[in-house]
Image (cartoon, rainbow, N blue to C red; front, side, top):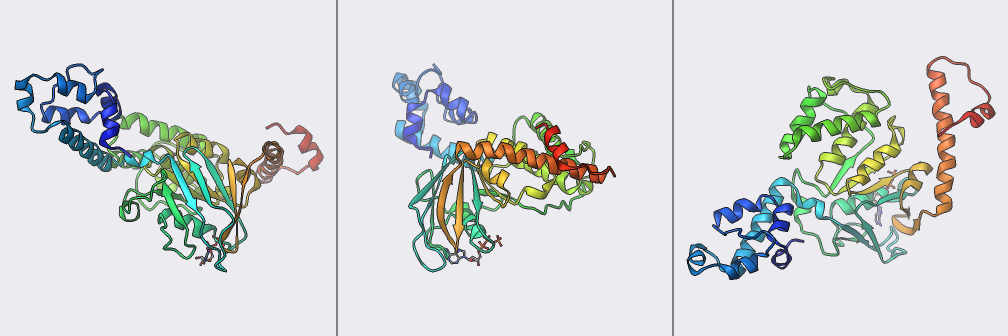
Length: 344
Ligand SMILES: Nc1ncnc2c1ncn2[C@@H]1O[C@H](COP(=O)(O)OP(=O)(O)OP(=O)(O)O)[C@@H](O)[C@H]1O
């Protein structure tokens, strides 16, 4: 969390690199940015009496005022969300009211966590606890911490800016827009500087994820299920301000699932994924096992399991090829041929 003590330690150059809009603050305050390699306090001390008289604030007030200014700008731009470096889940109770079998689970940004468990075991409940930043006030009595602190209640009530972005199985567009119009509209609402490049990048990444390519001027309502999902994943990874992405059953989406996860994690987001698919489950760094409403185990994916994942990918490719053969009316051959011919 940004505070004035952190700002105190930064040079002007570092502040402007991190928060470019701070330049207007300094201008408004008529604070002379003499040597950008210096810290605010160093410049303050070096000011002449006349220069000091022009300033409204003393050093401490100046730092506080700059901190609020940056926080407001971050809020406005939806930027501070990206500062979630650590998400922690503190143990609650299962459906019988028994304490869960762990104390605290820390998830760092860039990590993928899969959630597995039978139907009705409480996977959605866990995700809902995270989304609600639970404080012991949900049926599980779990607590959620962000950066090891009790999170601000703003996460619960801010409309457009959410802690968790959800990617669910059924994704239908209802707006009558072309792909580019949709992306530009979203980018504009996020007030980013390099809109053109960002929009191009999302379009390119989405096409790489989609099984079948789509054009810039394609109407979003006419995209296939897989293409819509590819577009939403690329858009969420690159444009969403939510630091945590929750994926519900990505398996049947007809997209390149591995690339999709890489893209999401590459943006330093925390990815939580409820899945029944062993390949996806093993793509996670850890998997949470849920039963009877409680977390019963947290398993780190071992190197042996990562090797197994490679074998599973071979099987997956075989099935994908069989599906392709079926679609194009080819006769299906015995599997032993396919297994030896496969190249992943
Ligand atoms: N620890 C708990 N204490 C009390 N109720 C719980 C607990 N965990 C889950 N529940 C409740 O159990 C029900 C089923 O949980 P949930 O919908 O999260 O299961 P799920 O694993 O997502 O199921 P599915 O795979 O079918 O989507 C919900 O009503 C949920 O609120």
